[in-house]
Structures are given as C-alpha cells and as structure tokens.
Amino acid sequence: MVEQGKGKRQELHLLNRKLLEISGVLNVESFDSEEFLLQTELGHLTIRGHNLHIKNLNLEQGLVSIEGQVNSLSYLEPGANPSGKGFLGKLFR
Image 1 (spheres, helix red, strand yellow):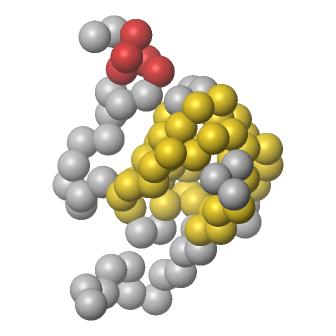
Image 2 (cartoon, one colour):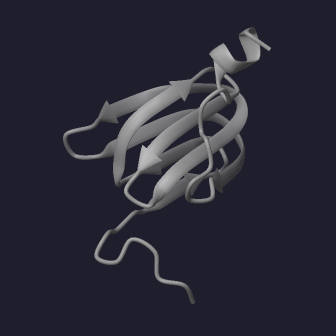
Image 3 (cartoon, one colour):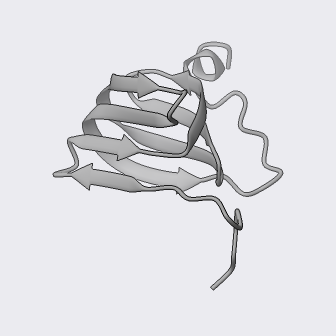
C-alpha cells in the first residue's frame, strides 16, 4: 500500500449514489451539474454524475455534501493539471 498524505485524513461517504459527504476538502475549484473538482488534503478529486449540486459547504471544517446521481469519483495524479475540466473548460473548447 502506498502512503499518500502522511498524517492527513479524508473520508468519503456515499449513500445510494445520491448523497456524497466528503471531509478534508480545502477548496472547490469548479463545479456544474455534471462535474465537481475539489482540492482535498490528498489531492484533486473529480466527481462526475448528473444533477449534482452542493447541499452543504463548510471549508473551515473541510466538509462538503453533494446531492445528485454520482457516477464516478477519481483522484488526479499528482502534478496533473486540473484546470479546464469544469464548466468553463467545456464552454471554451
């Protein structure tokens, strides 16, 4: 097992693919109804789905809740460029 973010902790709770609760969030980089890009303590996390929206946001505590149909969760490789993946990236293609 590869140790990433030694001493850092992140939890993801997904309930029936409809409610996603995430801890360890530093910033919401971009979002639209089909994709969220979050900067977390363990790297950039991309969430894809349909009718996604923020239910709760508390960056002081590092907590985000997202509602909608969640189809995928993926971490970007360290050093990968996260820009241009959200709504504005799609708009200016």
